[in-house]
Length: 156
Image 1 (tube, rainbow, N blue to C red):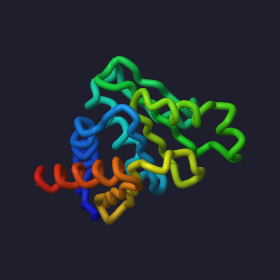
Image 2: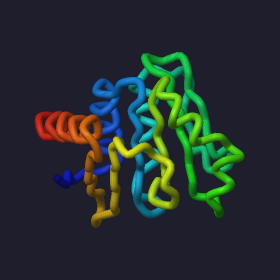
Image 3: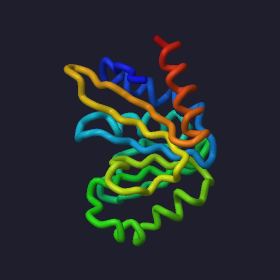
Image 4: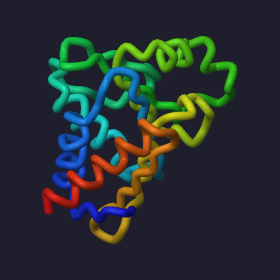
């Protein structure tokens, strides 16, 4: 199901609606072109989970950890990663496999880093707004996508 997001505020609202549905071990892949809203959505999720401080794009740090909220969050950005073996150096596979919190991965379509059961969120620029498409792979991913899309539909 595709949802239309009218503006940046709607993207942030979508992230805030996703956060209460998340549980330890959830992995979310964020896909879309530059400026599609991947970081904005991730920032809203991180803030809604109660992580202290403002989340920024981990484009240069590659992975940022946000402890201290309802769940710890690891926010990764694969935009600058050129080779799969570079992922070993940053330990992303260990973070994803740990299951201690939520993993948000921007540019998740560049490398197969997420577990088989995850939520894939594709954002696209659509005129003045954006479209969001959420697809779950595996039982938890499908349940999460369905619950989130229902929450988005109910919120107007």
